[in-house]
Image 1: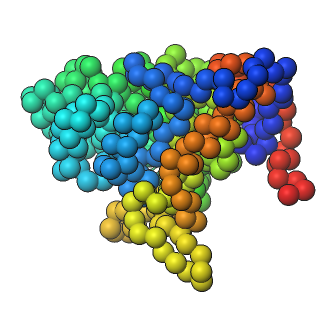
Image 2: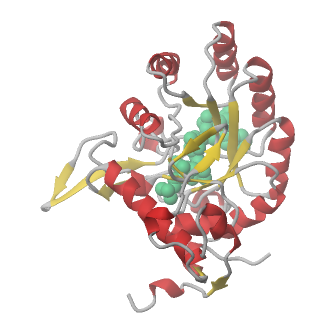
Amino acid sequence: MEIFDYEDIQLIPNKCVINSRSEADTTVDLGGRSFKIPVVPANMATVINDDLAKWLAGNGYFYIMHRFEPEQRRHFIETMHANQLFASISVGVKPSEHDFIDALADDNLVPEYITIDIAHGHADSVIEMIKHIKVALPDSFVIAGNVATPAAVRDLENAGADATKVGVGPGKACITKVKTGFGTGGWQLAAVRWCAKAARKPIIADGGVRTNGDIAKSIRFGATMVMIGSMLAGHQESPGNILKIDGKTYKQYYGSASETQKGEHKNVEGKQMLVPYRGHLADTLNEMQEDLQSSISYAGGRDLKAITKCDYVVVKNSIYNGD
Ligand SMILES: NC(=O)C1=CN([C@@H]2O[C@H](COP(=O)(O)OP(=O)(O)OC[C@H]3O[C@@H](n4cnc5c(N)ncnc54)[C@H](OP(=O)(O)O)[C@@H]3O)[C@@H](O)[C@H]2O)C=CC1
Ligand SMILES: Nc1nc2c(ncn2[C@@H]2O[C@H](COP(=O)(O)O)[C@@H](O)[C@H]2O)c(=O)[nH]1
């Protein structure tokens, strides 16, 4: 297998066939809905909250609500549905989560998307949860993760997952690589490619995206959707307060397995940090869309499919040389 990461790859331009980048179509389908761009904010407590979920769903973006206020999820689904918006929630795998799914089914409260969100998603516990959801809530689109190998993708798909999420340890707030020695940190893009070759259903590339160009690279190597944490934290609308330090403005970003999130120092695999304040989320998402439209034009096509076909070179760490 060829090993590389985002910064090692450059995509090679093809002849342009459109007259304006505005003609390039960045939309993507997932679970029977069409979304403006193939980007989903990470289901982390410093990236998404109820208000953002409503705004994203109402403005043509995919979202996944985090699972760190478990008792709020039922109300969240009801509120989204009352506003005619799709509900997309996260669950874990503990027995109480099986009970939660049963309770939703009993009340015919059906989230359109359910993401099973644990660190080591290639696990019997996840396979059992997928099967449980598929029996109790067969109309929910199930995303399962996180995983790092084709074998994991196949096992979760065979259990009934409608999409899998790839990425163990490449995240900005992640310390899995140093704490455990495992993961896709440093070769996340190659892992996405490896997994996508085995996948029969959509893959969500999760973690390690540091520039807008990395979104196009994820698509090139087989991702249908790209999950982004640190680059989509730090906005006016992001959870948390704006902090001013030495005249600079920041917001807090912390890992879902950090001590800050867990409230105790147990099985910690995440850290907390400050990310620069970035203004309004809508502006960042618009810029991602514009940059993807440019990517499509460089790929020589009219939509995201063109990016999946373009050639590339591996030039180790080349794009930052000379900057
Ligand atoms: N994408 C990534 O690289 C990573 C993401 N995270 C994020 O952190 C959050 C917390 O994750 P997580 O700790 O899994 O969630 P939980 O604390 O809910 O753990 C899920 C379940 O899996 C068990 N479990 C967790 N890790 C392992 C393992 N390595 N081997 C066997 N069993 C395990 C836990 O038991 P027990 O606690 O008793 O072990 C628990 O029963 C999630 O949002 C996750 O996405 C965390 C690390 C890496
Ligand atoms: N190893 C850990 N990974 C984590 C933790 N919390 C979240 N995550 C993963 O990171 C991505 C976001 O990555 P980014 O590079 O875009 O910032 C997120 O979607 C999770 O998969 C954690 O505590 N430890």
